[in-house]
Amino acid sequence: MEKVIDEKKQGSPLVMEPKKENGRKLFIESYGCQMNFSDSEIVASILAKEGFNTTDQLEDADLVLVNTCSIREKAEQTVRKRLEKYNAVKRKNPKMKVGVLGCMAERLKEKFLEEEKIVDLVVGPDAYKDLPNLIDEVEEGRNAVNVILSKEETYGDISPVRLQTNGVSAFVSITRGCDNMCTFCVVPFTRGRERSRNPQSILEEVNDLAEKGFKEITLLGQNVDSYLWYGGGLKKDFVKASEMQKATSVNFAGLLDMVAKAQPKMRIRFSTSNPQDMTLDVIEAMAKHKNICKYIHLPVQSGSDRILKKMNRLHTREEYFELIDNIRNIIPDCAISQDMITGFPTETEEDHQDTLSLMEYVKYDFGFMFAYSERPGTMAGRKFEDDIPEKVKKRRLQEVIDLQQKHSHYRTQQHLGKVEEVLIEKESKKSDLHWSGRNTQNTMVVFPKEHYKVGDFVNVKILDCTTATLIGEPVGYSDNN
Image 1 (cartoon, rainbow, N blue to C red):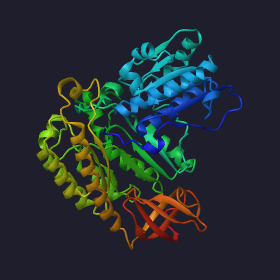
Image 2: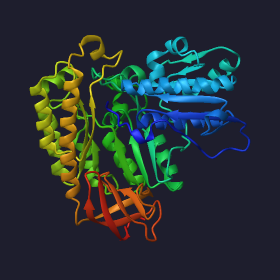
Image 3: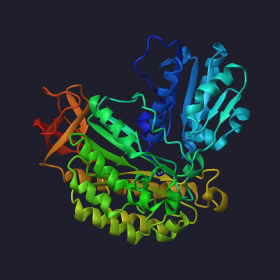
Image 4: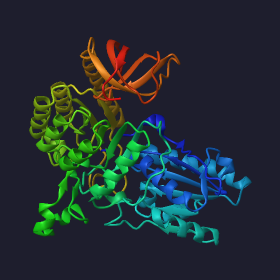
């Protein structure tokens, strides 16, 4: 649950510019977090070289791929339902091949071929470069599986095809895998050990995006603060690095500094942070560069020290407060959001009250809140009884949501009367006469279109707000254009 799941994007088929020479059709849809949507762009790039153009028409596809998530039970159930839909189409088009990619593929491996007779292909998150060989296997009548987790693969040499994009903002993956063995999380088992991408390949991708007109990037990883490049290799093996490797290593603060300097007109965001790994130098780098957005997604999961320990979160309540205080002192206008789990095994009413009191202290701008659901393969799933009644979980979750709504409104009200820079991303959902975009704090701002266009940086005076949106009027271009 360290990863933000945008419910509006779930199951979106990805479409890119077709190449005339490509004769085969690929239908690819993604579920889960931003990492999965980013990975789908990598897959599309690999398969474009194998003669596949994307399509958003399932019935037309020669190859159907679903990029899956194991973070919540609901995500897995959704994918199984989609496979039933593919099966109905496959009966009419028996030549169509179906593959499961990503975390669910990694978790279930060969079981997929046994349980879901429709599936021809099972590919884990580190095996996408093997897709051309696996597709050949399938076309020769054999089922194909590659779920080997790599210690080296970062896809740093593949330029992703930007599919799910407005041409304004893009994701840039900087790490893969995770070493934090949080007891509720399946990620270390589905995405492997943590390794970082060469900063040079990251800079090249960012510069390329700037040349193509992108105005904003999000540096993406399971745990971005843990980024560490020392010439390649796993994060845990840094202790064995040579003195030269250690002296020339680049940590996350160093990477932020490099990217901010390389493209001073480009907005930089990052996700997701882990409280135990976020250091003062990261906060100082944010304060130093105007183009690094003043927003941190900082999952806490619980406000109770006892539950944090049971979750194997390597920070305490007090350490989290200290980090919040440092952020507020160094970047007073920084927005902070949370992930929260209610009803973790053995959670008492007192533990729940600790969570509510932590929220009162921080007053988050917004959050992503879930009732605990046991995930097979996790430490919690193996060792702890899921002993909190569903009714209690839901009641506690509602109390957390209600408090967050109150705090969200408190935070949006603080913007009233201010002039803030907004990057126009798209037309407002509610009115074709208005644009919408985000300010540096990641809050959505809606304002009249006038003569502005998508991709413009506009100064907007904030006149009104809801719990989630700011409403304003444009007062001119910002100096960032």
